[in-house]
Figure 1 (cartoon, rainbow, N blue to C red):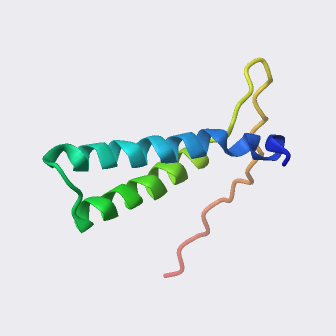
Figure 2 (tube, helix red, strand yellow):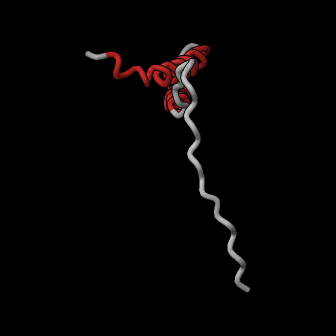
Length: 80
């Protein structure tokens, strides 16, 4: 199995697992897990992984990508 193809996802996987485990540990403080606490842990997994996945991986020492130019449009005259 080639582990290098998962390299872009390491950060997102780590964020998902950490948020999931944090929610589980918080739920286990009272001695057991309710369905609400399990659902909260699953939502934390999805939100934590998704939030971290949307942030691009930037390798230190590489130049940042140039922003794409936008075309400015002039507002049209209102039609009275």
